[in-house]
Length: 446
Image 1 (cartoon, rainbow, N blue to C red):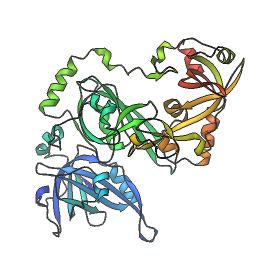
Image 2: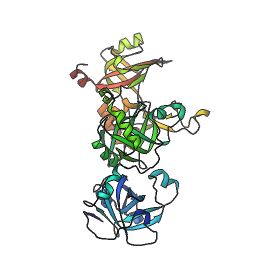
Image 3: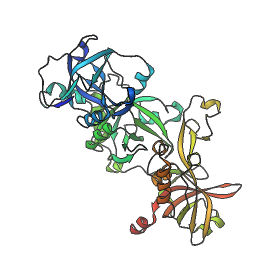
Image 4: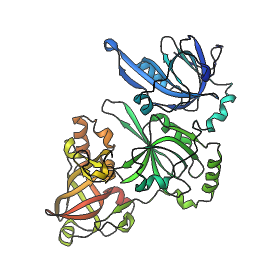
């Protein structure tokens, strides 16, 4: 059940004083983390749903799961957000399970219990006044550990942070961007990403697929907002071949934390030049393994010139005459996060033992202009994601009809393509590094 405002005068128990085996307990807390509502299989084919979130008061932090019909859970999820104060009525208090599932999919909490609510017997009330006691908790981190991992340590391959969860203190560098997506089952999804920087001056991309955290980023101001990221996962971004940080269901974010290291970092942020607010220039690896800026590749060539001159890099305006994304096995490959090499399964290198293997887009396509056609073209990573419109994790859940619709949309379109080249026994190959619409590139004068 849901109600808005201070609807009841039930005696309230602090989270740390909640007891198992006692009925009718009521507690109040501020929401510090929240998952998206999930549909779960119920008994006898029932349409069931579950919504998990985390609340805290001045005494403890606790995980909560609300059960009900999927429709009820969907509606409930839209009623409250992170940093709202809620009253939980008729809590079913249980000992916290020390299982792997509890640790992997939920935030770490200080309480030794967890709370379960159900649609029939429990109630969640949004508190609209009398919340002064919780106001300071918005800027007080749940975690007392201030041993942050700096971004330059995270990106340093010597430390092998990929796949691990870390705590970070960082400055918002760019305005968050949000993309609305639709899953295979027709459910809406969201992706929010932006860049962060810390006093090591290393820049890292931050990503989340949780709508609740995406909502939290709307008010973030570059160069003025400090984030305490508690339990974010370090990932190797196969699209950009760089390290990124991903916030998931166990992550808690504190905006502008009231702690000394954050105040020091804010002072550092004020001294950063305005140029730091610009998105980082993407770097690519040329055939001789040197770092080349995309902006430095300006020579436009025809396909005939490319095949005859074998340049190291260039720009071509061409039609994508072959783009088949209907075969998942030929569209997606796997890469080892240790050595970054393409692998058929687990990486066989001894030094990569225990490293994750992650999927990435890996298309072979054909390009045609007025001078000819080449079939030796690799389109992968971020460029492929831009054309497809979704990341690999979403694409793998697409139906055959959705894949065919994507192929029809992308194929036979004209593009301005920045490329590098590499040589194989079959001849010169192009590796697409940037894709722009032919029309938009003409309009912009490029």
